Image (cartoon, rainbow, N blue to C red; front, top):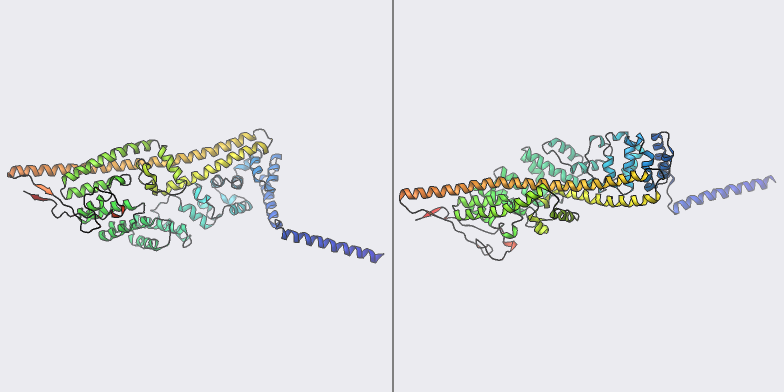
Length: 531
């Protein structure tokens, strides 16, 4: 009898052991969640319970949703559970709410909420751990959320995230040491590294250390990067050479800017300045002739026409100076009107069309077509504007999701009185954030338009000086001629083309973009008197 009982016991143990082993095998084969993950989740929930203290019934319901990973219902339950609790205002409470927003596909709002915490070290470590898992460096939210990095966050998130956030903040370029410290934290070959190197170039140049700036700039020009437009790098090199008095090399770098670059028209204007400084007004006339065509009126600034009038004055082509003065007043009087309107009210039809265009990424002035005539000249290469629009796009998506959450909450929310009012307030706050971001874009356009209007006014004052100089020279010539009894001198200038690819000057025929900038001007007879 004893043997039979022992045999039964052994058989039972073997069967039980087999059942356990089979269950473990089934867990492996069916990829069930490991007990460690469940355990970590339970530990987090328990730690949060301890942070709260004695929990209310509503808070217990919340923790039940959280423990079951039902994050949508946990969000609905947040307000009934913690709206009147001091816990919601603690670092851990603020972080927990941000975590719920992220889990419900509201990452921008979640991260912006998270970074309102002044003392992140006080956040429950187990909570911060899961937050970091949800927000890796690859997450686009780090480029979309408008946050200001504080030193207190430096040891919380990865260095790459710190660099990414700070790289998109407005840097004080004069504080070159801060930029250098940030550079040391970046990895070679990353976009953040290239961007910080670009900030180094600007900072070093502004601090007068052109030698070091040139070395870093040369590295960027040779590198395989797409963070900074190659045309902008060439223009920057040309500007540094220009400021140092190396005019011929500067012109060489201006010529490197491809016609496909948004900076090509800027390069032509600054190249024209270089020729003025070299004492070659004929070449300034040649360069400017290629870009004053009516087809390009929306892409050139007032300074280019000033340079042209100055060059014409230097070769004593007074009729041409008068023509340029009229052209300036005709074109920029109208532009000042539309830009002044934009500077006062940024919300214009062209502004909204620009925002819609930027939702798909960067654009060009030519792609904007007629809208380029009523928008600030630099909108197509305004990185800050592009970032603001990217944030707006993300917020609009989150506003849509928030609306869906609100609709679903009507069916699955808490029964507590006042619950719907709290969630409706959150939805309204989400809409306010969207409106605020859109207003920020309009304000940015207003500021850009106002700056351009001011610049046009400054150039207009210089045009008045050119006009006064023309009148003075003509008056002086007439007085000298009258006193001497001779005829008034007629000042001549001539133009010509030296090769087959260069256009006759002036040009009135069909426009071929490939021929632009091939003009040559001969003024050997300029300012010679014919009697």
